[in-house]
Structure formats: structure tokens, C-alpha cells
Length: 289
View 1: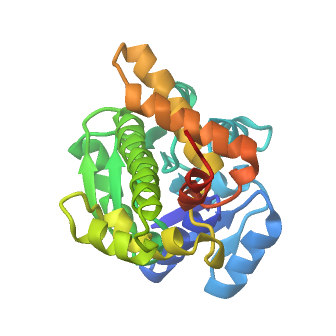
View 2: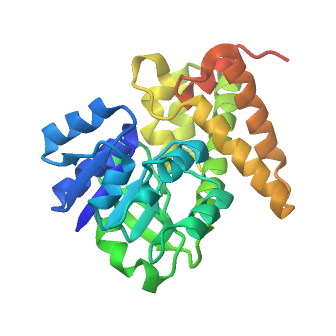
């Protein structure tokens, strides 16, 4: 299948590489052109100079972008994706608001379909094609794209309607960021009693409270600055802002989520924005009642 891929960040580059490995005909675009040309040289993919060129060269265009604003620019710019003539499927796999997905669906080129299909899983899951894909479509709509999703993830769950993938991704991320915050609180409490961080983490990881993310993020929690950033505090704060707004829109209560958002804002103001979200543990170590 001819696939265009926009957004070669930590997750996107790994995902696009798996599409090449699966035998798809891949063209890539990135805001910093050097990443796209370097990726093309490394993998044998092609590099497009503009998003429009990407959509002119592909049947399916996948975007893996940071937020609504980035997606807005890539889709609607003068040489944006929606100015292209060939692509019939536009698949947004980043974490976006449902309102943005609705706008994309309403303004897509005639005969083209927009699907929100965000993913759950860290960089390692992207590299291993082990992502969970949450697709806002029914089985009939998604049938054409399942071979693409199978090259990227271990499981695809079809949620029936456009926008539901975005809602589900925000729901999952709110849980992840809540776990991140409460882990930091549990660790600092244990450490205050003189328990070594490694021992405290051993107990938490072996307990009923353990979650898969704790296991694969253990090295970051125990020595965050010695490892590459996988997901920044700033991105976590963005996620929780969008989630809080969505909860307000639906009229659902999210008291713990608001506390998580408050702490992420405090950490970002303290200079943690570009650090991995695991740095919330170091931030909380400095917090006192």
C-alpha cells in the first residue's frame, strides 16, 4: 500500500520504519526536512518536500503530531495535506481533541475519510510494533486500514464512531498521568521513612498496584536524567488540559485529574517541561507540606 507518514518524532520515526519493514511503499514528511531525508536515506523510503506532496503520493496518509495546533498547520496550510489530490484516507494517530478530529472529518477533501486512531505505548512499543491502536471507526470503515494497523501494533480496537479514538486516548492518558503522580507520592513517602528507592520500587512493582508502565519505565524513575526522554512533562500537561476540558464539556467529574494537572503545571513552571514525565518523582522529592 502507498502510505504517507507525517511526523518523525520519537514515536513517528519508529512507526514509519515498521511500515517500511512490512513492505509498504512509504513516503515521509517532517517539519524539519533533515529528519525526512535522513530517514529516507536510511530506509529506502521517499521524502516529500511538503505535506501536499505527501498526500499527492499516497493512498493513506498517517499523521503522528504533537497537538491540535501542529495538526491544524499540517492539514490546512497552503501546501497542507488537504490540498493533495490522491490520498483517500487520513489517519491521525497523535493525541488530539475530539473537536479537532470532528473539524478534520468535516473539511477533508471530497471522497476522503478521516479516522482518529491514537496509540497507547511508549517508544519501545512503537519500535517493536506492539502498540495498542484505538480507532474511531467501525469494522467496515476500518477494514482497508487493518493491514496498516497490524504493521504498527499488537492490537487494534475499533470504537465505532469518529472521535471516540481521541476520547479513549485521553481517558487512558489521564489514568497514566495519574499513576505517574501517585507513584511519585508513594515513593517519596517510602523514602522519607528511610527505604531505598530501589527497594521501594521492588515492592511497588511486585504489588497489586503494579501497572505495565511501571515496569518498562523503572529505569527512568530510578535515574531519570541518565536516560533519553520518552514523554515530556509538557506533553503530559497538554494531555491533561485537553482531558479536563473534555470532562467539563461532558459534565463529568475529574477531581484527581485536576490535581494531576495542577502538579504538572507546577513542575513545568519549575523548569521540568522538557524533562521526561518520570521527573515528577524528582519534583515531588522537593515538595514539602
